[in-house]
Image (cartoon, rainbow, N blue to C red; front, side, top):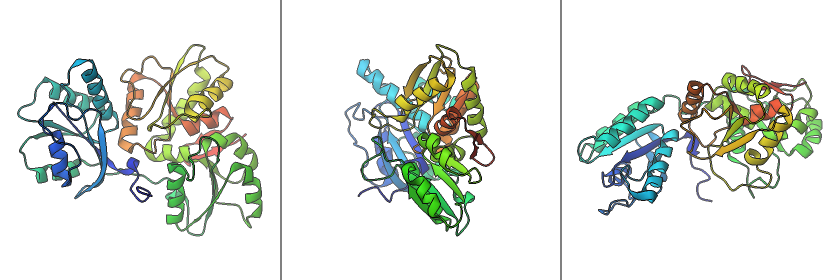
Amino acid sequence: MAGLNETPSGDRVRLAFFGRRNAGKSSLINALTGQEVAIVSDVPGTTTDPVSKAMEILPLGPCLLTDTAGLDDEGSLGAERVRRAREVLAATDIAIVVTADTLGPLENELIADCDRRHIPHLVYTRGDDVEALKRQIAALAPSDPTRPLVSDLVSPGDCVVCVCPIDSAAPKGRLILPQQQVIREILDGGASALVCRETELAATLARLAEPPRFVVTDSQAFGAVSKVVPPEVPLTSFSIVFARAKGDLATYCAGADALKSLKDGDRVLVSEGCTHHRQCTDIGTVKLPKWIQEHTGKKLNFAWTSGNAFPDDLSPYALVVHCGACMLTRRAVQNRLARCRAAGVPVTNYGICIAACHGIRVVPKTCMVLRG
């Protein structure tokens, strides 16, 4: 199947191209990649919705390039296109502002927005040296675009049990990306990954001659899994190890502590870094709100965002609950955390929040949980 061996998008440097209509954004993308990735036309507004393409660009390596609609698009539909273009900025590692001549108010406004969000940016004027731009982009690339998920937690010869529930929300015929990536890192570390469902966990552990190095579970199975895993065996979740790699565990744990301060009527934002088809048992829209309200005993109002969308104004919210961010880069997650801190809004992570709702506390230093 196409794409199975590609670098995950969350591990690619995200480059986004912004500018007015006919500024030359699409032509620049084609010149950078040496391919006809974007449609080039003299007709203003050829690029409508943001279009992304995964590419390898030397000397930068694996990238995700996003072409956006013109910032000067007009009319009600044009305003929506501009809004979607600006949404891309929230998940951008490096912004390239493209102009046909000189910078105007629209470009300067975007640059100011980049500065406010601490997003590195470059200005490219049509006709400038593309090779020089590549070198500038490489110089701005994140020095640590990826951090280990579990490879630093295992040694050769270890055995790690991975609990992967298969329910109506599980994709047909495959494991979800966080599970795939964790299993791959276990194997890369010379350890063994033993995979089972939560319903077979007790039997799986009983067959082992010695306890596993640790157990990593899907967060939504914390309640059942924590009852089966012996207290002396370390336990964590896929979402928590992603939180460690992409976000900040201490910040997320403090956010989970804010659950007990929620009041009736408070608004909670549940944010996912990807978009997917919602199921009746969806974790973000169904299970999390249920568990949070049962845990707090409060009647709360929930709002949701997905993909590149993340509110500029966080003041209406008493808490933000973010996914593990397997589809976002570390820099994008760090920008979101910085915005939560600036707004004084506590933020936690799916896995850490779910653990808290089941009476389980995460130890930031180890990323494992304490039970009981």
